Image 1 (cartoon, rainbow, N blue to C red):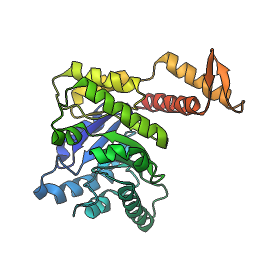
Image 2: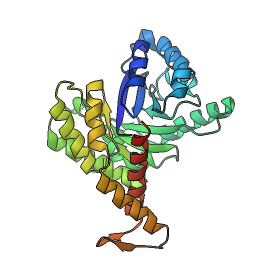
Image 3: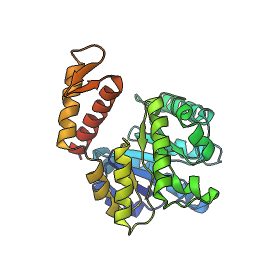
Image 4: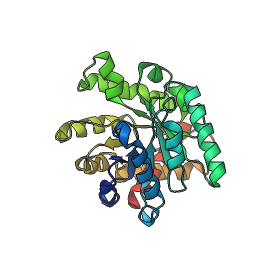
Amino acid sequence: MRSKLFVPASRPELFPKALASAADSLSFDLEDAVAEEHKDAARQNLAAALASPEFAASAKIMIARVNAPDTPHFAADLAAVVHPRLDYVNLPKVDSAADIRAASAALAALEQARGLDRRIALLANIETPRALRCAAEIAAADPRVVGLQLAFADLLEPLGIDRTNAAVVQQLQLALRLAAGEANVWAYDAAYGAIKDADGFRAEAVGAKRLGFLGKSCVHPSQIAIANEVFQPSAAEIDFARRVVEAASTRAGAFALDGRMIDAPFIRRAHAVLAAAAGAATR
């Protein structure tokens, strides 16, 4: 999932363009991008799209960003989007492991009621200082959680911290990546709101890639190509990952490969690289 394109669910006229884009995944927003008076219509738009032949035929990863669990919209959002075509629920404003467990229980009840034969995964947004401090606990709260995602504007603006400070951004990226690593889930990079600043988007993406992030959120189609390029595993990375996985299948414990000691964390990373490469090849 090198790139994730943000699409307001209140703008169904944008859905065909998003499907035709080069983004690996589409994140349909029911939360901040949708005004209060348009919430019901946005839910209906997304529910209809998930059930459509066009979405069924698409190989893209489908994500719904719902409203936070403590809002009056959460239950209605889940009821609208729990569908076999949905891959992830992006859960905003997560502050504790209890938030994750409550969301997972609500998803499980709907999945059972609708006869879904697979579990919809959770991507948890880290948007507050408390959430960042508890990020590893949040990620490990339920097997449904597959990744953590930073939300820089929500995290930094209330504290009066400059979002464009590269040192701050890198420190927060590292903190999230370490928390994700502790919980053995992936880390996903935040959106970059300055649409015309392609160099800034690229620099932030490159920094995230070096820290082992899976990909980057895109708020405009012009950012997709950069994200795909930066997060696409190189031929050398894919070759090394393939040889790590092949060697691990016949050896127990740590072993040496190309003069490097390989153990469980390296093997997990190799599987992630191959999965990213395979996903890019099908899109």
